[in-house]
Image 1 (cartoon, one colour):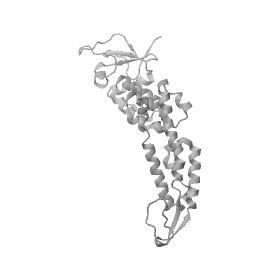
Image 2 (tube, helix red, strand yellow):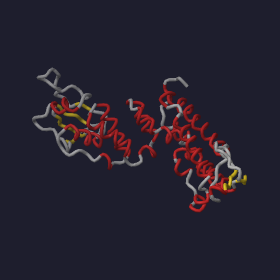
Image 3 (tube, one colour):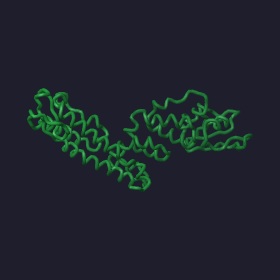
Image 4 (cartoon, helix red, strand yellow):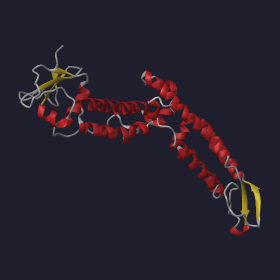
Length: 292
């Protein structure tokens, strides 16, 4: 099968090496650029101690990846990786890591972290990339979105040796999910109408507070309606409710206004407890070591 020259970096008479993509596109590359910008390509220097090969070197990546990758080793306009779809970015990121094209490594890592809602839409693929190349911060960002996907979706993407750690990790999120209704239940309260503070002043029973002599205990009907709405939405969303804490605690405008006072304090307390519980979850990286 014949190959065709690349339009981006075509072979010329002054290049040291020619690479060929998996789809047979030829790239003429200068060794000095590889030496200055990369650390993982086949050796191409001659005078400095590395051997120049006279034969084209085949690479496993396609031309769609190499067209982008080689632009990072020359003083030319860099690809706008932030505008690309996920499949291209992750393939470029893997190639950049493999051949240690350091500028491309940095750009791709930033794009996976910040661009296009990639973490929300492709948490498993990014988690695998992060675990493979040692990026614990990126791995932690994917933890909730990936753990809460259906197991049938996740298992199909995981290598066999990661299936059991992922199941164990997901079980920890399921424990938190089951605890949430009790967190709200523990904050059930009666409203104390305190005339000395004005009729709109309420203090939940569970909060430590000096009781004035002129107070009346009245059941908090607003809290009951708050729980009905929040827990109904919570069960409809399932585990995914745990990655949308703002949405979980959002109330209709009228009920939000009515809940000012005792219910606002109670909601804040539940949210604090829940966020702390999620923050203290065992990281997925710990399950990879077999410690859990």
